[in-house]
Image 1 (cartoon, helix red, strand yellow):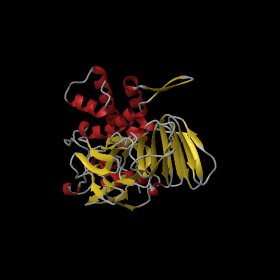
Image 2 (cartoon, one colour):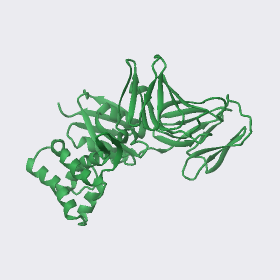
Image 3 (cartoon, one colour):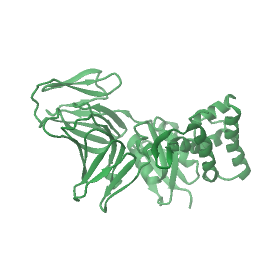
Image 4 (spheres, helix red, strand yellow):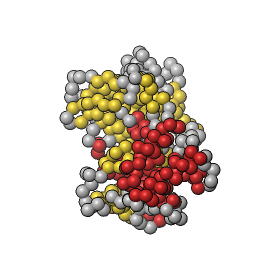
Length: 380
C-alpha cells in the first residue's frame, strides 16, 4: 500500500487503487456520510482505525525492547488524519484540489522559507550565503570556505597550520531561512529558521566549543580526545560523537535536547546534576529545573525532513513555528489555550495550506493580510 496517504487519495481518484486500498479510502467517506458530523469530530473518532490500517502496511522497526519490537509509524498515521480532512474536499463533491485557503486574497498568500543564511567571518566580513555563487567564497588563516552545489557550507582546513582560537565565525538564518554547514572538524549542523551558530575557524585544544541560539540538529564527528560542547541558554551539552537536536528559542520558555543516537550529557548551568540521555529521550530545561521524558523523534526532527508534525500541540506553539518559517507576524483575537491540533504537512506548502487544514476543523479562523496573520476563535 502507498505509504503516503496523500498519494493514496490521488491513486484512488485516478482509479488505480487495489481493493484493499479502495476499501480504506471509501471507509473514510462512508464514515463522514453516516455521521453527518463536522470533519474534525469524525477524525477524532476514526483515527485509531486509520492508524491500524496504515500501521499494518507501513510500520518499520525502531528499536527492540524486552517485550519485543517498537514500531515507528506515527508520521504516516497523522498524515492519514490530516488528509482525511483534505479528502472531505474531494469526496463530498467540492472541485477544489487543494485545502481551502485561509481567508485573504491569493496575492496575500505567503510562500515557505528556504536556504537562506548569513556568514560573519572573524574579521567582520558578512557574506550572504543565499546570494553567494557556488565554489570558494572566503579564505581565512589556514582554511577555505566553500559553498557546494546543493547549498552546504564546507570548511577545508590545511594541516599543520596555526589558527587562533579567537577566530570565531557566526552563521545565522533569518526567519524564513534554514541552512546546513559542515564544520572544520567534519561535524554537520542543520540550522532551523531564526537560529545562529558561533564556532571557531579551527578546533584546537582539548575541546570543540560552539554556541547555539534557536534550533539545530547536530551530527558530531567522533573525536574522543576532544569532546564537542554545545552551549545554549542555561546549559551545555557534551558529546564525543553522536546525533541530537537542540531547541533553544527564547520564546519557547524552555530548552529541549533530544537524542537520536549515541549518548550526550546535559549540564544545566544552575545545577550540579548532570543528565545523561539515551536514544529516544528528551531533556527539557526551564525555570523550574530539568526533566527527562521519552521523545517523539519524528515530530522533533520533522523540520529537518521538511515537514510540520503536530501531535496534540497547542495552537500558539504551532503558530510560533509557522511564524518563524514563513516570516510572519501573528495576532490573536480570543483565548486559545484550549485548542490543540494533530497532523502532518510539508513545509514546502504555502502558508494558506497549513492554516487551511486547521481551519477545516471549524475551531479557528485565519485572516492573511500581507505578512500579518490574524487568528480568531470560532468555538465561542
